Structures are given as structure tokens and as C-alpha cells.
Length: 243
Image (cartoon, rainbow, N blue to C red):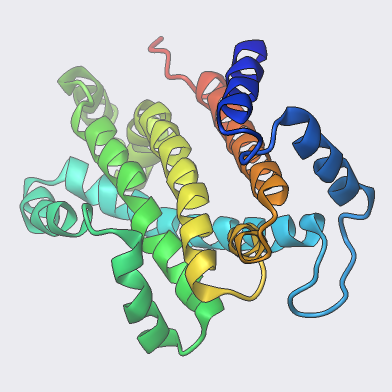
């Protein structure tokens, strides 16, 4: 962090303070944190409210994407027919930019808020889907034979053997997906406007407040780091150990 602050200060010196330094940014950041939840109208809300609206959209889009990705990944990983049917669709849709989905979201939902949730859903589900499919497909044959030897029903096989083995891979996919969702929300809110951390960045640019932009970047990065740490803990907690 000290190296990063040093580079930041050096950039400020080279640009002759056109890019605000850490001290100037911290001053503005402290003012923002002094009253983070004020609401003076549609285009004048505190950073706390902006962050809350973004987190709400991210979690909703992420949850919807996960509800699609995990069952589809289970199907792809456990069935050759499922893999042949779904894999071409995944490979075609996965590289599409979230910004390309936004007009379709507006057309379908007639509202920018729902369109933003839609692009988060459609772009964040792929890592979870792919990692789930990989985890399921890599299940050793011995594990499958155990289920057959004990006469497990399909449901018991899924809950006692398949999911416990694939769970670390699923959590890895979720960890990557939440990161993508958090990246996409900024771009989506810049397009949709209204409220949110992405809109806050764009509005700050229009107001020529680079200190606010840098403060928002620090907040976005910190929240992304917290997401990653949380899923890292979950990944270690649910790591598969064969007995």
C-alpha cells in the first residue's frame, strides 16, 4: 500500500496536480464519509446510499445468475448430451460485452434499473456455470461406483457425493462471478444513470471532481477485496476431503 501511495503521489507530481494526490483525495473522502446517507434529491445522494443501491443490484443479479448457472453446470458436467447442447451456447454468449446486452435489457424490461440487473445476471453467471461443470465432470469413477454399490437414489447421489465433491469448484465460480458482477455494475450504472456508485463516478466527472472519482475508485476496490476475502473463506471452509 505504501508503494501504491508513493506511485500515486509521483503521478500527481508529474501531472502538476492535475490528478489529485492522496492528501487532497483523503480530505474530500473524509467529507463524503461525514454524512454518507443524506438524500437531497434524485441527483444528490450520499456515498453510502449510492453504494447501497449498487450492492442491492449486484446481489440480486448475482443471485439470479447463480440460480441459472449451478443447475446448468450440473447438467453439463453430468451429461454428455447436456454438454453438447449447452456448451456451444455458453461459448457464443460468454464473450459478449455487458454493454452490448444493455439495449436488449432496456427493450425487454422498459426500465434502466432492471436492465442493469439483467446485464449483471447474464454476464456474471458464466464462471459459476463453467466451474460447476468442470467440478462435476471431474468426479472420480470410484465415487460413482460407491453410490451404485450402496444403491443410492439419484437425489441421495447428488446431495451426498456429487455436490460435496463439486462444491469447492462451485464456490470458486461464485468467487469469480461476484467479481465480474461488481465490475459490470459500474459500467451499467454509468449507462442507466439515476443512482449507484457507477452513476456517482460519472456524475463526479461531469462535476469535474476528480477527488470524488478517486474516492469512489478506492471504495469500489475495497468492496471488491471484501467480496474476494469472503468467498476465499467459504472456499476453504467447504474444501472437499475424501475420507
